[in-house]
Length: 121
Image (cartoon, rainbow, N blue to C red; front, side, top):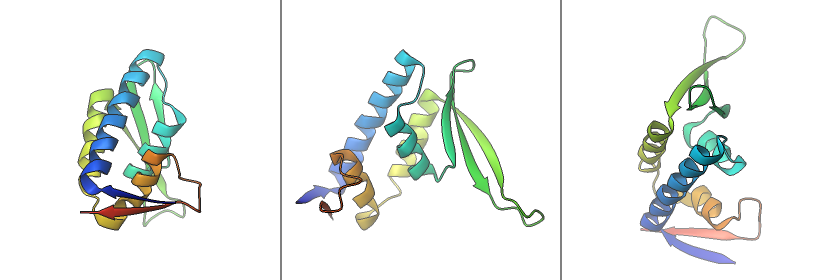
């Protein structure tokens, strides 16, 4: 089945969803699997986890290293509010067909190969 979503609907839906994920994280002191997946895809991260001691989200991003055979992973720490702002900033950079993944994410159809999302402006 095909779903038609506007860029505004997707970006607004993501903003609302991230706000809910952050509130949930504040209450239960952990990241949901869906929130981890969204962070990893949006920020091109290798991993994301919640540090209960510092109350921050730690994100590992692969850094290419010319002098090493292996890639380095640089760790970034964000407070929950900073992470929310960083994700919102990144969502605003996506346009058109780039938003298809997020449309499927919002509709809960990531693994449904028969579903299709059309992004309209």
